[in-house]
Image (tube, rainbow over all chains, first blue to last red; front, side):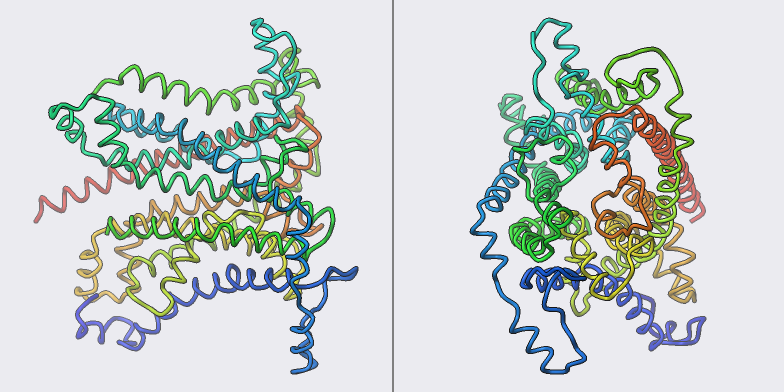
Length: 316
Length: 272
């Protein structure tokens, strides 16, 4: 900051107090916005998850009636219960959906890493003048509509789709493969749409790496593979961690991919929540599903945030 | 190493083929004469003609563009302020919570964000329509803007700001005359990111929109649920074309700005 003596006589003449007020305002506006539209809504979800479903508008009870004063508030709290959460444990649909979402997300993250790492590595080792172009080629699909990229696979994977046509024509298969509306299609869709999120952080950590370290390792008698395993992989670890979180966390709650590419056997919690809300109109159960999903995600989200903060501080 | 090893060449070729072939197929088949999307029946642009007459799609596109313009502009202002506070704000009460609220929406499943915002809007009695979608989109995209802008702010030399303050600029002037021009490329790419995120969003818009405001992704989703259609292929091709032109233009513009900035810095160094 500037010298205090000068700040007092700055152009606007509002001095030190004005400066403090401006700082407070600059902090307050985005802060209050996020509190009101990000944090408070979660408490509303929590509250409704403890309510009962009702055929009314809004379709749940109790609603907080402040006009009745204290009695209204105590009445409101006495009516809350954990029924919806008990319901989630009794109907095994929900448990299976949570478990299968986590399983699909873990497998898909590993697959995305396996596809993304060699690409990020190839980009980081490409001639320097190619890199901006390669980077743009990775980013371009990321800017293109997610929905359209998922949709593109529907035409490829269906029974009469392009993939089956090619395989039949080549004589590799004699009857069309059923891929669309299975978990395989869901994995393909996830790897395809989330690939840039994996490549970019890994690429940025690989690009910063000093290549003479590899030469040093090789000079000291490491084989290429061993040097890669002992030097390159550990140095790109922050990128790998960031990429895996960026893929895994949103995939657990993914809705579009399982509903367009998955079948009736594909159980994912994002889809269950959507159907509870839009088809069954059971807002309290949908909210309870969201609360449990959030509890599952708290640990990875906190870890991700730590990782990001550590990296920002390391750069500063 | 200045040459690509064959392993790297193969992995890049296969990887980019995987990324681009589905979109190329989509584009080719949008010019297909036949209604049956998987059978090629000759070149035709008739699906584009039908699209141009589809009132519902055009209305939805107009709603989507208005929402995207408003929400991305608002998100850029809020997100830049948030980035400035995070990088330059020092310690203040609730800083951890603040940075948590900036990073969490980046990975928060959309179904949760959508549901919670909808319940908020109903709780405070706000009618669902364009306004509620704008509020929802602003909230999650300001976090993306803030991440993009703060990554530029951390690498930027703070002494330039201090010099301006020492030379008698007010903090507002220092921000406008020194900081803003330097972080401008990041602010612009933040706006573009917020704009595309808003154009693209299906889940949050489905929760927060009312019957009066249907966005394009909502329309596309309800159409593709029934299967692949040539009209959607045509619409997708237009969207891919717009994005491609936009991204290439944006990258050329930022590249030129960076070259100019380097020249300015060199010139400044020489006159010293």
